[in-house]
Image 1 (cartoon, rainbow, N blue to C red):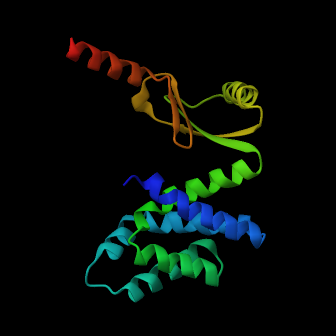
Image 2 (cartoon, one colour; image 1 turned 60 degrees about the vertical axis):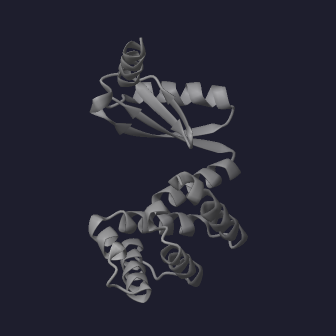
Image 3 (spheres, rainbow, N blue to C red; image 1 turned 135 degrees about the horizontal axis):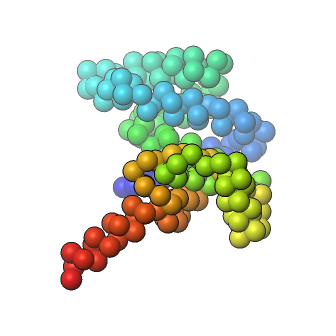
Length: 182
């Protein structure tokens, strides 16, 4: 099962809890810290270790998240850590955090896009992308930019599960597939 499919129900439930308790920003920082902790290779190895009990895994993860976020883990956050470990969903925590942020954006009637380009975008290029996306989606838009030199040129724009790929790499790959079929 794809991680985004696993993540959406968790993220939606967390978002509903966060909205009810007016703690969206607190949950956002918790999920960011949890994502950083659980994506660490040594943490992944510890979680995967069959010799460690669920309690040992929980204690370590909770302590690392508390240290990373510089605050104690709440009862609800603690319950989420336990649930994720119980259901062996630690690999999905980054997707859960992303889906949560998307739910926050949707609730705020804004959209957050990831823009991946072959080169560092200038301020004017970033502004042009934001303006285009704002006029297309008729809402407030924010973008997170990332550089991927393997693209050679062009950009990839991600909106959750939707991807617009105008990169040279994608065009070369499509041409390669087309030529290999014929």
